Length: 277
Image (tube, rainbow, N blue to C red; front, side, top):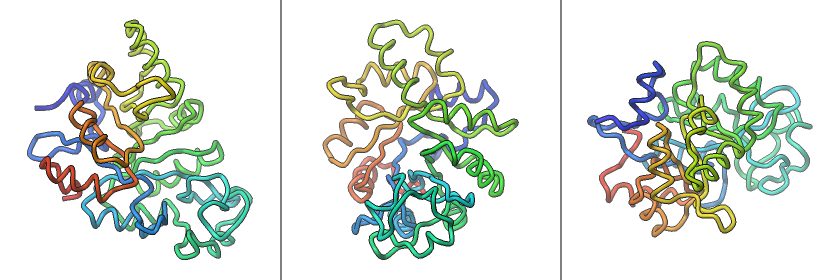
């Protein structure tokens, strides 16, 4: 039977797309490989995404920045220094210059075009890291006609709204930014959830940590509220087996992890695997 989120999308005329993840008519919780999966910590490398797919992942999470000449690349940080043998801000390099830079000294920095082409059946959660990437990202998704296999997210609601404003008849899955998540948490805790359908209009998922400071965000009550609003709740970034199991028992709709191997085993034990079959 379809869940409340599925029914709301059907009423709005929007396709299930990214959020469907149905198997024999039953919607499974989604397992996300956070920045792919690499035992060698080669995050956001094309090999890491291929390794996640080889484990059975049908969903990966990544981040996008854009080079000075407009190429959308998969990279979390604003600068190259932490995970590569290069230096400086990505936006100050051309793509040709980045081709000489290696993640962990081994793997090239991939483009979003390359990931969409290499894994045509994989759904991708895309975090927009800067305003400079908004229009180039739209161009890539247009080129690949990939709107039904992506979820667009950002900590910045301003960036998300700017991206949505570029679209006309396309309706990718969208996750709320920090301000709208904050409104969900605060109003939910106060029992004043009546404005939330308006505040969260155009949003399909809430992607949240278990806790923010001392505030517990993911509870049975918050999961139930999200579902009542027709939203999915995805939780990041969970690397402990006990927490993964607890969240699945609460009924969350997705778990993001750096330990793709661990989450795959837990999902398989519950009959939710593989997710790219």
